[in-house]
Image (cartoon, rainbow, N blue to C red; front, side, top):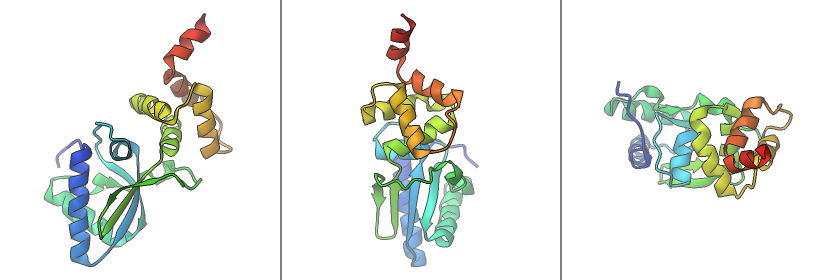
Length: 181
């Protein structure tokens, strides 16, 4: 199995092929993507990811078959479209999700900037820091408190861990300098 990085172009090619497989099966599917693939497709960010984290909203069985077929054809793991990441998705509906790919057989919506920001803050991974900065800028946030407010709105009742606060503060290094004066 190849450990291929998937960039925007490659993800779209794989979705095209999934769509053809679904057509062959006479099926339709709908997915909601998060993580690096959503960053790449929804925000035109030149970025690569190891898999496409997704929640399958319609056509689960047929889509899973198509994902395996396409993956094997290209030497990818069966989990190149990873539906195990759904526990990271806020329960609050994403009313701002936009369609990032559409064919007659496959519709893909990408998580909104607010949802992506909240999920990346919750994950607390250093590798997400660049994305957190891009999302804060895209949303026009002025400081870490505004980023934390987005997190609290989408994960109500969750404690704001030190890692969440730290990631939010790192997105605004100029604010950290101001506080240090």
